Length: 155
Image (tube, rainbow, N blue to C red; front, top):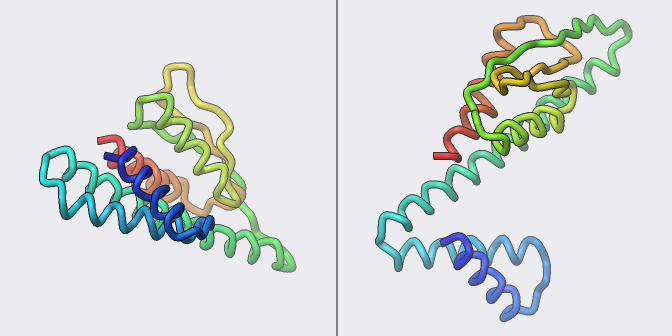
């Protein structure tokens, strides 16, 4: 279904003659809607759910990117930043190498945090954060944020 969606989006771009990311996104959305309305199989329903989860996932990441960027700006511009850096061990529920890599990259792309290492048994990820007031809240934020959404996408 995803490949058919991509193919229809590419056909949309070719037919309109506008080779831009926004036009491709519009073609992808239109193709998704056409596939959703014309396909009634279980695979089409799962595909629709996954695309919706992916869109929410991207929106969540962009929101976290903006919020953490603003936090870092405030820390940098304050006269006497009262930072409390920490290295936090986060137990992992994701198991596949791809999911662990995605989680680590999302954490690293978020300003103020950096993935340092993953344990050899893939059960724990070590993350450095520039300012941590509550370790448990930070850990819960990663687990209930990025990790939960990655698990939802892999279903």
